[in-house]
Amino acid sequence: MTTILRGITWEHARGYGSVSAAAEAYRAVAPDVEVRWEQRSLQAFADQPLEQLIEDYDLLVIDHPHIPFAAEHGLFLRLDGTGHDDELAVLAGQSVGVSHETYAHAGGQWGLATDAAAQVAAYRPDLLPEPPGDWDGVLALAAEGRVLWPHKPVDAFSSLVTVASGNGEQPMRSPDVFLSADALGQAMETLRKLARLVPAENSKWNPIQAADALSSGDRYAYVPLMFGYTNYSRTGFRPHRVRYIDIPASREGVRGSLMGGAGIAVSARTRHPEQAVDHAFWLDSAEVQEGVYYDAGGQPGNAVAWESDRTNADSLDFFRGTRATLEGAYVRPRFVRYIELQNALSEHVTAALQSRLSDDRLRERLDEGVQQWLVAS
Image (cartoon, rainbow, N blue to C red; front, top):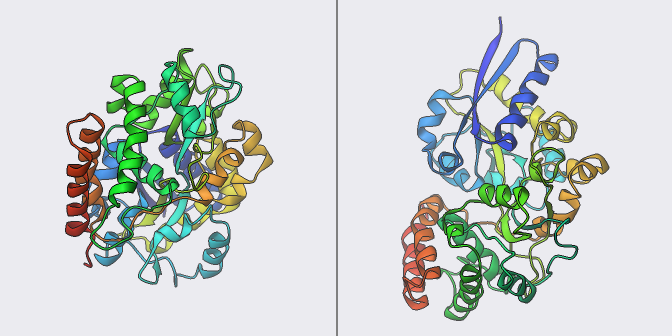
């Protein structure tokens, strides 16, 4: 009798094509298990309540800031102690930066880093032989009208975190304080200058829209901050290939980029825990990540795939070109209500970029958010 596992991921070749193709390949490994994946929008990926999803799905592709809430509310199965501890140790050693650790909480492992990402830079090598390496160069190129920057609220918030961290002060690390006045002012000055020099519609764009625009025309040549998508670096995905590289250097070099990515978790309500856990570990194994998962459009979370000559040759060195940024990435606070904070405060960052909010008032609202949401559960 065939066991059917239902999975939910996000709507993109990177999110859906990868796991769907892997599910087909899994039939040869476990003929009595069929994994059926469904997809949801990128916005729903970030916002849809997990309490709803775990009732309908066995496997979930999720964003790592959801882990503390899910762990403390019993939404996911704990993956350590399920007979896969040796594999878990291998995956920990194959982590890209601290991506594996971001799926751990309160002494347990609640997900696996299927996909590794952070904010990175991107450019068109056919239009720009030498991309800028620091923020002065970025702003100079933007003044020529050749730069895009997706900064809808959540991406504006992410960029503020990245630039401030790169300047030497990590946000939300001190009790009740988002950033010091000086650190916030310096980061916002850079981002406000950039916002004035890129197309106005960028304030409503996400990274996919920016990558589509960068890869489709000849007007724009560079994006300084957006989450990377290996798909756009591959032959045939779009009219032109995009090369991804490390973020512009700040005082700390290319450190401080906000870490994103996605992981796979197992619903605590699944009726097939053994089969679901087995599939999750198989999906994150080096062989699968470097092979069928990558080939179907995925962006691996396993470092073996990031170091592979084959995947790098196929993607304009996407992985080697951004690895330093991933290794020095900023990890968002590990609080149960962090997602609420991010959703609420992102709008204020956009308002400040559009001069509808002063930096002093922005700081007040950001600090209020830290005091409200970054508290012990």
